[in-house]
Image (cartoon, rainbow, N blue to C red):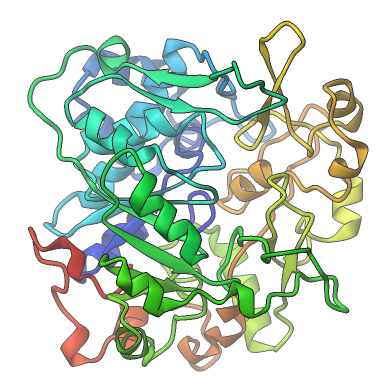
Length: 480
């Protein structure tokens, strides 16, 4: 689920009920830095930073970003540096520490298991994010939006606090180029004692071919798969073959996009089904098809424990009740080039008028990618940045059209919008799956409030409730 929506509170609530609670690891560094500037309500970030194994780094973060009582209204959030192939040490340390914080809080006070979800498409922060999560004893790593073939090996290295590298995709690279992100834990946080637990790795895939490639060609052990269909929220895999759009302008998925679960089963690894599985009976249906269980996002995204701004949750759920909620698979909105599910919500940058009124700016940079300069160095660009800048960097004009700033939009969903230099407040961009329109079953007597426990109670019958994940038999989860 979008950055910060499946935060530590939601992951903790699911984990305490015996299932796999998953933290969205994308942009955790920026999210928690902004919460610190809001005064760290409840003191949770500061409490967890107090447990970080390198107190000097925690103290530096607090000194730089924590504002007692919160920043004044009308003052922009202080930004962190954008990632590059050679980020400053301070950025590595920040990312490590704040990913530690999010996992620590999700695991605090219970013995359930917790995972972290990251995107292969957002490559440059991933090494630091993974190491920080492992310092907090994360149990699972889930990754999709690409082919995360090198991540299993990275987890093996980090278990020994050893240096790991990750190949970074760079447009225009030659056969002689090998652009890599390098992360040495000893140089970033110092030599820490003991060995870290190597988390289980689940690859999020949308084809049998990719599942086979991940099992057979990864640099380390793949422990299972999440099979994600095109009705799931967030980024979807593009349809196989030539892209065709229906009358509404949405991508058309066909028989080639249906994953053969019998062939997945032949790989001998557990798998979960994702995409419109958030209803009663789906666990039994999935298990009858050979799956271990289901992954559920949308029905949790609007519960009390999710990180969405409460006012936004209320507005969207009211639209569900009155039948006006619409989810649109936009083939152009995301700068990644992947189809992206958006809610047609007033004030969202998904609206054409809001999109056209927004001044383009790229100040977070999570979705910018590298391109090779003539001298062999790497530059960075994003189709959502100012068009003139993108063209100067060798980008194509057609790639800029209708691209939304997903980075800023997703943070605005959390009630953490940036105030730009032109005094404009960044608009939100809401993403969820097709299950949104069916959330009315949780809303009784006009209420727009329900909890993660309500969702689990509906999804699981008595034989599927309780402590369904028992250490060390971690791969028995029915819901994640």
